[in-house]
Image (cartoon, rainbow, N blue to C red; front, side, top):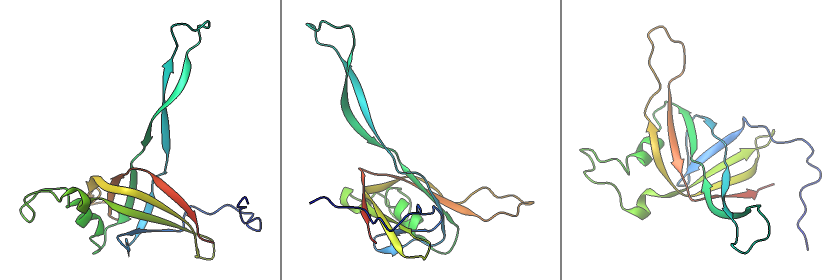
Length: 161
């Protein structure tokens, strides 16, 4: 039997009400998350005995773009701690082993009533770029940010409401 969407919901979800959870802990003060997208690459193929001169496109490798999360700089060190699993420094002379530095990252989209409506899960994600703080400016009036780029092996979507 086919599964039907909630037909009572008419308005699309807003993009400003979301939460990021890493390892079961919510990351504080997230302000922006880049889009989730996937690309199926193609290869052109033409058989030697083909009677046409047109190439036949074939689906090939699948690529998931990295996801960048930006958060206001607070005392929350979730991004820093996750990034440091792959960065060697005096506290950790070598990087963490493979299973330790990959995580499931959950992005919860909330409806207008602040109820979780959709959950996206990034699978086997790891930090490929970390920015510890945004630019400093003596004449600035901006909030300081940190950002984390996650490379992952795909994502899934789950409807919660």
